[in-house]
Length: 377
Length: 76
Image 1 (cartoon, helix red, strand yellow):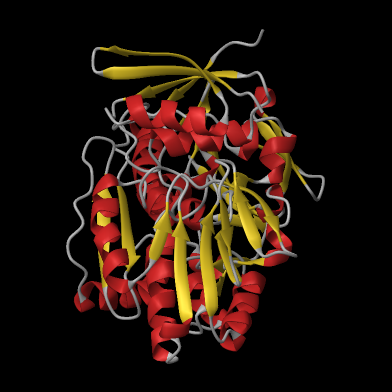
Image 2: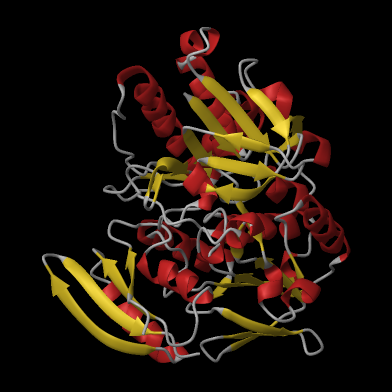
């Protein structure tokens, strides 16, 4: 049984290590073969970018060598896929090689596309890449006061990021002694301040308490950098001195080029995690079009379900369980308090009041992540 | 005429039916039709309200066995 994982991000890496352990006897006996193809020899801890933008992490803390995270039984190549030849059960890579499979897992992730909104990339700060997070860090350091607008694109990775950056900016400016010179204005695409109703119910009075203004049903249409105004699809405008964006995301270009799904997101069965019409092709993480949070946690739990199911296919001939849609997201509520939202397809979250203990747990997880990627946590 | 596309947002707490619809419309062509399936009672109000505000066309909304079916056409 040849298992091929395309993508070495959080989902692909956890899945590969999970399978390497579950299938250790089969891999040793040559009854199964496990391979990963990735576009990079480095693995980035993407949630760390939020901290990088605020000077609370440094770039070297975000990376490990991908090979160092993988169990030795996993055959790993830095050789990005260029063609998915699904009818022939094979992929063709940039180097010109062709790899066949019995089971394919696509976990190529998503990418920020601020350029989808005219004027946004040129005029806004963001933190979804190392380069942009460093640029935002430097911009914040020289900012002496004015109106800061947070504007959110759809779909976006990490649904808690809009709230987290807003609360963390409040504390950042407070610590610099200029909070009274800064007006924080939060905008959000739907009719409340967060997609999760219970999170919105908690966050709205927090905004009121901290003097953060907010505006809902605000979907960016264009940014007028000359006049420092962001305009919405709904016909409203927000004036800014500093514009911070959670940009819209698309799936990877290779997914679009191979016409696997609109916007680079592959139609995926939400419980089986199979690609529509392809029973031996699985999709996890940001790459799916499942209406679920695009977050590392989503990929993590999908990888655990899929690891169990693929191992069962090898050992028993069939998968053993449906995916329940579990997500666990920390929510940083400033520099030293945090809460969390845990939910699945049937049970909504019920976030508790933020505490220092949950914040420190998040700080610990920023380090423990590497154990998580190795499939140990 | 292309087939109406289903956005199955039943049980989607995050990003939720309206956010999922906004995302799908970003990558759609003008004239494409969608039907959102939602188990969130709020969708019956907030999706039509947003469509009206932005200028997309509501084609119909009905409830069937606890599921809202909201049909629409992308207009711009």
